[in-house]
Length: 139
Image (cartoon, rainbow, N blue to C red; front, side):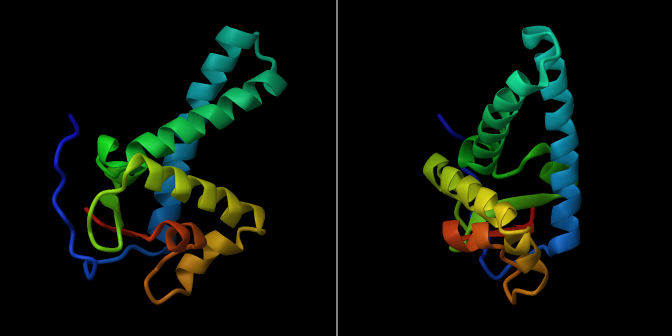
C-alpha cells in the first residue's frame, strides 16, 4: 500500500531552472553509474546493448520516483528538497509519471527548448510539466 503524501498547496514555492537542472544532473550521474555497471556485467561492456538497458532504467527510475510510490522525489530531488506534484498539489499516479516522462523526452528532442522553458515560464513549468499538469515545488 502506498504511503499517503501531504497535499502541497499549488501556490507553494515553485522551483526554477537551475535547481531543477542540478537535481537532474545528480540523477543522470547515478543512472549512468548503475547503467555502466550493469552493462559491464550483463553485456561485457557492449555499449550498443547497454543503451537499451539505459532507456529502460531511466523510464523505471523516473516513473517510480515521480509517482506517489516513490514519494514524488528522485534521489537528486531528495538531495535538494524538491518534489513533483500535480497542479492541485496532490501526488502523481504512475500513469501521470509516465505522461511526464514522455513529455520530458519530447522536451529534450526539441533542442532542449521544452526544458529551458522552465526559466521563462511564470509557473516555472517545462513542456513536460504542462503536458502532465505538474509543478516542481520545495519539499
